[in-house]
Length: 258
Image (tube, rainbow, N blue to C red):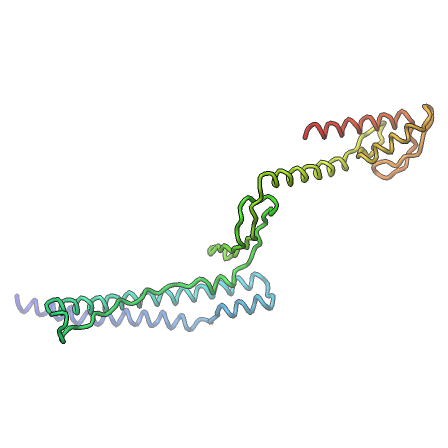
């Protein structure tokens, strides 16, 4: 039985170095493959951006640089994990050694600190993101916020937000009212009416022109009139009166509905 145990121990001892050698070789092969790939840095990406290369090329280069950075980070993290195991073993040994010694003993062993975990710095890659300016209605904002940038690391986009101001409810109501008036005037300017197959402009200025013409026209008289399509037509007083009446009714409907 003792001989069997010794043989087993020898087999395990011989297997561990072989396994370690295989893992080290695989790690070396992976690192070699990584270094054999064309290297591209974030500075290269920024250069492409400065030279106004097509966005597709910039994004392709950025993705390649990110892949390389990720691979390097994974390798550094794996090395850190191995180092942590080694340092932790050394820490435990030192703590066990120091446990039975006086605090001022010359035989105390310094307890090593655990290595810092590798951190992935996103600031470099974010400089290469495509930028989009977020539209904000600055006249209707209710909070004062500084200009800021938000990053979408999945889409590789940097969203730029402008600084905003805190407007009061009264200010916002005033802005909305003025905009409403402008929109209503724009809608009024587009109005037309149709009389006997003729299309007349029905905006406020056209109504005033119709009213002036009607004042001086005789009942059986006609006048030349420029229609909505810029054609010139002979229009009777009755037709012009009907057009003016319809235009006024449309304007009233527009005002009342809003």
